[in-house]
Amino acid sequence: MTTIEAPPQTLAPRIVVLDPADGTVVTDRPAATDAEIASAVATARGAAPAWAGTAAAERGARVREAADLVAARAEDLARLVTREMGKPLGDARGGVEAAVGTLRQYAELGPVHRGRSLAGGPDATDLMVYEPRGVVAAITPWNDPVAVACGLIGAALVTGNTVVHKPSERTPGTGALLGEILAGALPPGVLTTVCGGADAGAALVAQPLDLIAHVGSTATGRAIARAAAGTGAKVLLENGGSDPLVVDETVDPAWAAEQAALGAFANAGQICVAVERVYVVREVAYDFLSALVERAQALRMGPGSDPSTQLGALVDRRLRDEVHRQVSAAVADGARALCGARVPDGPGAFYPATVLAGCTDDMAVVREETFGPVAPVVTVGSFDEALTRAARSPYGLAATVLTMDMDRARRAWRELPVGTVKINAVFGGAPGGAAHPRRGSGQGYGYGPELLDEMTATKAVHVGVGRGR
Ligand code: NAD
Image 1 (cartoon, rainbow, N blue to C red):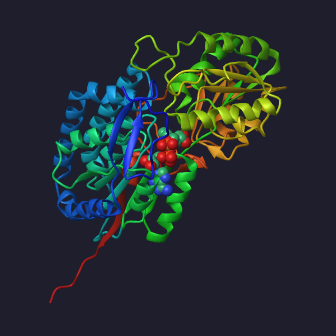
Image 2: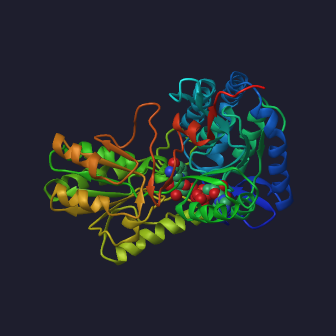
Image 3: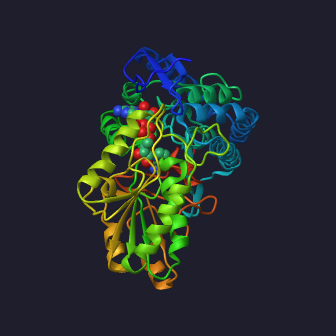
């Protein structure tokens, strides 16, 4: 067993991923060179006309077959996700299942994605028709690597685009395996996977692309938008958040703590819509905090491969250092660590579920995204104050409000400047729901049926009546 405790080598010609549970090498593979990336884009460009000219029903059938192939290899994918990024195996299986469901959904929706006919002059024909954009770069993160990639790839392919996928350098083995599986159902060149780090991503977005779909951090999203301004590619960004949870005095504080624990600690806090900051009204703050600490301390931390694990390791020590830096800075500025907040001894990148009381909005742990199992709690005087402070953020991904007061619920969903508002549930939502993230959290639809609109360009057609000779 080789044990090396070092971050992934993003700049080296090879990408090395260590199992965050024990530090052993899981993946060691070459990173794509700039020439290979240019060649992948040229291949996608070459394959584009034939794929765009394929009947939509046939494209749907290919994507459905791709879903079946992913389903057949679900266990291999899930195990590799757990080994590369640490999440409990049950959660990794759930991510692959979600990916299969999304591919199947797009396989059905693609062929019925339709344009419009318009009411023009009585003799004219006026249409709005959808066409593929061309070559799409899908650039994805590691926190739910199969589900996120399959959403972008499925929607792009079924609408007639060819795709170059760049998975995260933290889950390159998963990305490469997924690419191989999907390609088994597709004509050559329609989907290419290129592995590499930020430099490979930057080389990809410098290429002549028609659309860049990025799911990842806000800083990267902004770098991609800058690059795309130079090439003219359309950009879709699903980026980071600092999602608030508001708890008012009308709810049971023990139930609110259960919701907060789920939102802050699931996937060890490595979810874009994780609870990032909690505003609790003073009247229930003590009971809420006590129950939250109890839940945090009850979580069983361990390797993702152990079925009893509830809190897996963070993806790597680089992220753990960042999380601990934010927690320590908050404590230095007056926050009280009620539990956690300590880097454990031993191998891997574990970090305990952490509850911080007495936080303020200017602390990085509240203001910024903390991609770890941390619940920073701010005690406020009233629901109004909570709502005002929840709205004040450089991000606008999602927010949750726990209240039994209908008027407060209505005000929350109307007033919060975010893409998704959840009342009385930190996670969930009906199938097909899609939202526009706001501010630093991105732009455009990143999922749902509306992603098919983003992946296509609309052409207006006017056919008049000619006069023959
Ligand atoms: P990241 O932006 O660092 O990496 C994501 C991808 O971008 C990787 O493939 C990476 O190699 C690539 N990349 C990095 N620099 C690049 C550059 N200059 N040009 C082109 N590509 C580049 O993000 P991450 O750390 O992998 O993922 C965590 C982040 O993703 C969190 O902020 C999380 O909130 C966000 N996220 C958002 C959503 C959403 O739907 N809004 C979903 C999942 C994750």
